[in-house]
Image (cartoon, rainbow, N blue to C red; front, side, top):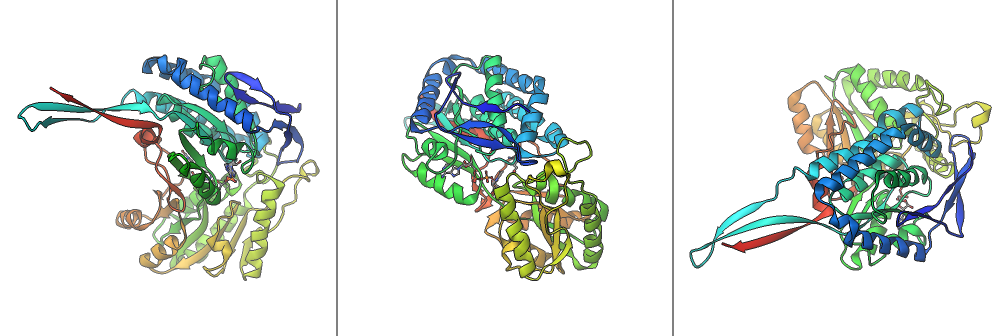
Length: 486
Ligand code: NAD
Ligand code: 6OD
């Protein structure tokens, strides 16, 4: 693969920096390219371009014109699907089929869904009696929030970035995207698509770099940014929230999780194993909604553990571009070290290693990659850091429970509150669990089934706010009430 150059995209043009850093493929540690690192002046130029476009060409389009352009962006992603897939696979190491079936189509859908939604949202209206016996009518008008800073993680780069950029642009905002330093490629490719689609310069800007004392901090602390939407670790969310306090700027935070899967004795075992198999191992366990704790009702426990082990044994770890591969590497050698430190901790804390627990054998051309084995443990105390902290790797701990009440206490015993996945054939159990689990999303007999019209977000330390459907519009617009004396 030729070595690429990832420049910033500001006001419709490619912009360079003197400082650059390497972007490496986690499957074999080969060099993909050099990424330009934005300094304060570069970020400032991006903010100025976004402000000018907000007040200029972007605001002059009708909603119909704006949303037609966003459909062209979606068409552009679909037309250049193979390039997006190749870029995402190289940056992340995810299996080719996952990028084909999940990441890239969702990138296109995020533009289509919100372009259509914005045309169909009713505005609230109230007729009132006035003190002098007359009437007045109130109606709400949605105005764009302004210049939006979009700070993104590396696990589902295009999917999560467009999940913010799609609604932000549909609502008439302009954006500056800061992709993760690990995954600069698809945000950069999207800039080409924006140009091809005829999106005016300055509407979509990209600045590359790291977080603290780099592009991320310069963007989130810039007074010209009117709102910040962030997906990433809870600790980073705290830092960004503090930065946003200067100037009272709103934030939308989608943060970490330590999600529980709960399997009742009446569950369909095969379906539960398959569903939770995805929830634990898909994308090498690097999905914020993924499951790292499984609680199984005692009568089913041994059979579940045995079947889950067989599932894990069937995972084909290997070259992301080879058909048949079901698991690639983790994102980087640094992240591998973090995941392996939890593998070691599990042993120290007395875990029974049901499967994995180390580094897999891989073909020689992948020897330098960030490989870890899919791993299953039992027997850990609930107090172990392995059970309490987000690992973000292809691993889980399985523990038994007796009663529904106990399962709820165990599942809720974490500072996080993002997602859960409950497996049962009893509808009443399902509804009670849906009400009792402290999460933003509770899946019943399923996992990561997404309807983009629904509210998405985390409770407790998993985030602030909801996006999705009209909830995205709440963040990306200001609601103004107009009161007309009749
Ligand atoms: P991260 O917080 O390390 O980085 C995310 C982004 O923030 C990167 O672009 C990074 O450069 C930037 N950043 C880091 N420090 C910053 C600072 N001080 N100021 C401004 N920007 C800064 O997260 P990550 O490792 O890229 O992603 C994995 C994490 O994301 C996991 O915790 C996962 O659960 C979480 N996540 C959550 C969701 C969700 O929807 N809740 C979705 C995906 C990932
Ligand atoms: O599906 C989505 O919209 C979404 N935000 C998924 C998040 C996945 C986390 O890794």
